[in-house]
Amino acid sequence: MQVLLRTKGYQVLTATDGLQAIEVAVQEVPDLILLDLRLPKIDGLSVTRHLRRHSELRAVPIVIVSGYDATKYREAALDAGCDDYLMKPIDFDRLEDLLQNTIPLVAAANK
Image 1 (cartoon, rainbow, N blue to C red):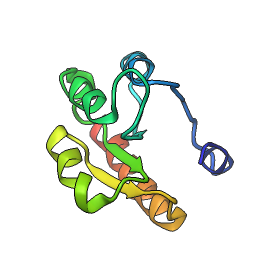
Image 2 (image 1 turned 30 degrees about the vertical axis):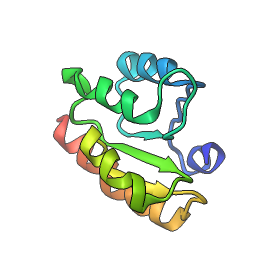
Image 3 (image 1 turned 135 degrees about the vertical axis):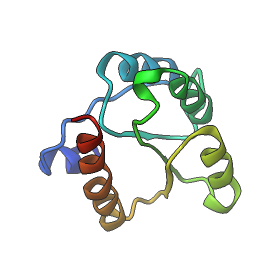
Image 4 (image 1 turned 180 degrees about the horizontal axis):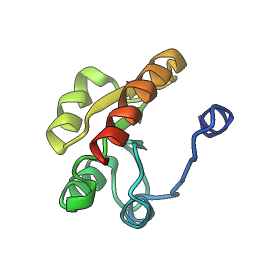
C-alpha cells in the first residue's frame, strides 16, 4: 500500500506500533490516517480514541484497514471515532475513491 500511495504522489508516514502511530500523528498532523486494528502496544481503536482527544487531530479522517470482518468491527471502529473501515485485501479502487474524496475535503477545511 505504501508503494502504491507514494507512486500516486502521496507522502506516506509510517509507524510500527500504536504508540508510535500516536506520536507521528501528533507531530505531523496528517491529512488522513490509515490504521490497522491489530497493532503492537496499543490497538487501532485505542489509538483512534487517543487521537480524537487532540484538538488538532479531531478533524483528521481515520480509516481502519483490517483483515477482520467488517460486520463485527465496523461499528466499534465508528464508535471509537473512525470515519471508515476498509477490508483487507485492499480494494485499491475503493481506496483511491476514499483518498480523492477525503483529502481535498481536509485541505478545504484547513484553509
